[in-house]
Every structure is written in C-alpha cells, then in structure tokens.
Image 1: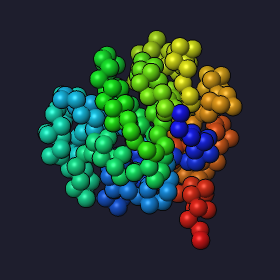
Image 2: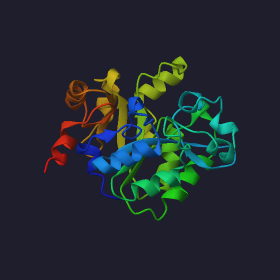
Image 3: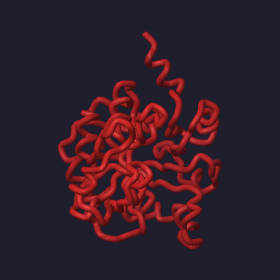
Length: 251
C-alpha cells in the first residue's frame, strides 16, 4: 500500500481547488491544476459513461455544471466530451486526464460514485485499470459498500474508505445501514469519510481507530475546519485555504 499518512494530517481540497466566482468550477482541470500549484491533496468524483469511460463529475446529471440535461450513465463519452464547464470552457475531464494533471505531485482521493445503486463491476474495474502503474499517492472511497469491497480487492496497493453521513435522500432502512456503516464488518475500510454536519456521531466514532482515520466533509471556513479537527482526524475543505497549507506557502 502506498504511503497514506496524508490521510491523517493534510487537509484535502474537495473537488479540487475550485472557485465558481472566478470561473473555476468543481471537478474541473483548472481546479485540479490549482490544487497542484498549491501543493494540496485533492478529491474528485468519477462515474462511468454508457460506453465505459470514467469521467469526473459529482451529479448523475450534468445540468448543474454544463447547463445541458445529460445523464452520465446514459451518454457516450463523445457526447459528454462536447460539453463545456464554467467560464473557461474546458471539457468534462476523464479519470486519466486528472491523473495526468496530478502527475504524482500531490496525493489524490478518488470518490467512486454509484448513483441509483446499480450493480455490476465495470466502474471499479475501469478505475483500477487507470490506476495500474500510476506513480503517486492515491486513495479511493465510495458511499456504496459494494464498491468499497470491490475496490479493496482490485486495488490492493491503495487505501480504500467508506463514505457516509446523514443520507437524507436514502430510504429509511438503507439510511440506517449507511449511517451505521455496519457493512464495515465485511469491507474493512482503511478510513472513514463522514459528513461534518452529522458529527460527532457514535457510529463514526465506533469505526475510528488509530490506524483507521475519520475524515470530515466538507469544511467551508477556518471555523468549520477547527470544528472538524475536534471531531475527526482530518477534513475536506472548499472555499478557503487551510492554515496548514498557508504555512506551506510561506518562504
């Protein structure tokens, strides 16, 4: 397994170092280049297109980031590649695009998105294939425990985490299963990511150990970052520069 110490003590830029007001959208190549320039680890989301390409986007529908009503899972990569994000007009990136930008210069965390709970192993296999031979610090996570289990089997060299939180959109039985992360008994994740607004939480504390860090998401200010460090080992951030990275910038 690659060195995963950064998961404990280096704040992670959520969906890259994005700034919507400056025309740098979330999960964009510009946001990832900004993270590399700052030297901060960053997180991003991947989904699978209808023709089996891992593209970087959080929502199942690309309307919010491109203005076009396009479902990732029902569209080809060629169709999605024609879309543009933000004022910069860059295309929706692929996983391989992001790995090229990172280039092993900063750690990256890949969030494997499975909207709708669809089965199959294609997404995890495509992600694992892209990471094969990549020389850089990588971790992976998913809200879907099935994906966590598959990723642990397919990417033994990389830490894999279970993401969870309040899960308000889930059906009540699935919400309890997701919040409690009872599936961790079987999947044995290397870390846990949990919604900051839902912390402290007995379930999250139950799975947190010295070797299994708890990472809170997402802090949007230094005040929230301070609270995150009171209830977790590390945190994802957006909209500000954490003190840890500000110190690194000083000559």
